[in-house]
Image (tube, rainbow, N blue to C red; front, side, top):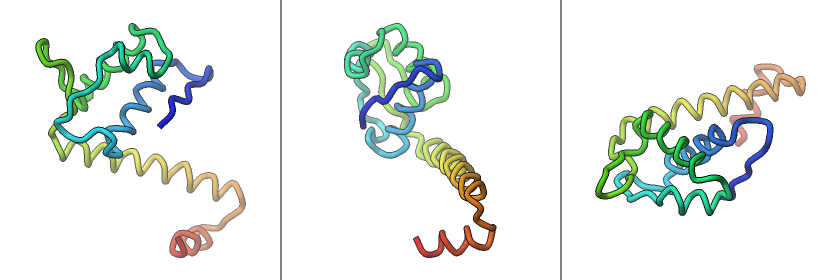
Length: 117
């Protein structure tokens, strides 16, 4: 997944969202070793300090587990991953729903549209 960073939001917040999506979508599996700050910073073309800030935030959320000797790994807490995935899906659906309403779809038309997909 490419790092599509924009200037409309702080970079570290975009990094958090990007990495969180990778974890929640299964790009990184529970218990996997996580790339180093320098590797990820080079891949995303950002300052390592900015990447460190993003990874520290993901540790605070519990998605990443830090270890002084082994680096970081993805949490093995399946319920945390499932809950965060559900929250993200709700946000995606809410945005999608709002856009369809903006396009002039009624609630009934939205239900019909979704049932066809």
